[in-house]
Structures are given as C-alpha cells and as structure tokens.
Amino acid sequence: MTMHNPKETIKLPEPILDGDVSLEAALLKRRSVREYGDRPLTQAEVGQLLWAAQGISGPKPYKRTAPSAGGLCPLELYVLIGQVEGIEVGLYKYNPGEHGLVHVNDQDLRLEVGRAAVGQTWLAEAPVVFVFVAVYERTTVKYGDRGIRYVHMDAAYASENLHLQAVALNLGTVVMGAFVDDQVQQVVEMKQNERPLIIMPVG
Image (cartoon, rainbow, N blue to C red; front, side, top):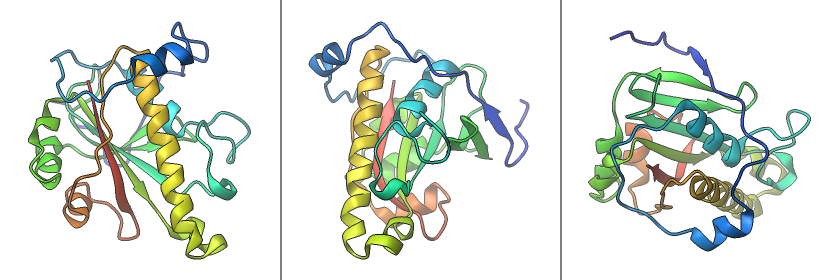
C-alpha cells in the first residue's frame, strides 16, 4: 500500500455551489444518525462536507461558510478516514485555504476515538469521522473570557453546516459531545493548545 508523505496535502475537488437539495428540504430531513452503511465516501463528498463546515467562501482569510466572532476562525478540523475512494486510511487535517487534507499519519483511529467517546465504538462503522477542535486563544486574545462562549458558538454554526450538507448529500451524521477531552486530544495527536469540542461520524 502506498503511504502518503508526512505533511503532504491532498487537494480536494472544488465544492458544488448550487446543489439539488433546498435548504428547507435539508432542514426537514435532518436527523441524528448512528448507523452507517459500508459504502465508501467519495473525495467530492468529503470535500463538500469540509467546505460546508469551514470552507472559504470569499476573499481570504476572513470569508468562511460559517460565521466566526471577529472573523478570528478559532476552529480546526481533523478528519479520520477509514473508507474514502482514492485516499488512504489515516488521520488528516483540513486546510481551508488550499481546500485540501494535510496528512498526519496512516493510522485508523476511529475505534480509539470511539473508546475515548465513553465507549461509543459504533462510530468506527462510519467511513469518515470529523473532529472539531478549538484554539481558544485566537478569540480570547480579543474578547477575553467572553471569547470562550464565542468559540462554542462558532463550533455550533460549523457543525450544523456540516450536518445539513450531509443531509443534502444523502448521508447521515450525528453531533457527539460525550467524550473524554484529554483522551481524544491524545488519540488525534492534537497540538497542546487545541481542545476537542465536537465529533461527527458521517456515512
């Protein structure tokens, strides 16, 4: 099996900007889904989900698909890939500016993250698992302690975007908040200043 070089960026297909499912239809169909089929996701689907959550939608670096207090963008997105056409199993990090995945390692960490999520090992059945993390200092440097609340609001906007995009792609997901922070941080090899906020398996 060919392994990606460390820190290699995999360019994702450009996002579709005018889909076939209306916002109202996606809202109507949105449900929390915890059971997934065995069909791999495509690179286009992964790219569309990432763009919906934290993609660039206007002049860099401020215009994003999800609002952010002060335009400070404190969120990072890790992607645990198990079954995606044309992408090796492993841990990746989303680079919004390049609309690409930065390769971190070749490990399948879905089951370990499920164990860190208080034993919710069923999430390992999802072809892809997204982990939203916060770098609080990006926002608190401007807003002080109030910025912590703003970061959590940012995460809510971004995760709802991903959820609705999943529905529009006929995919299922659920927003998970039950996990042991330190364990998830260790499994996903986060930087010391990155704290996990939300886990979203998609399939």
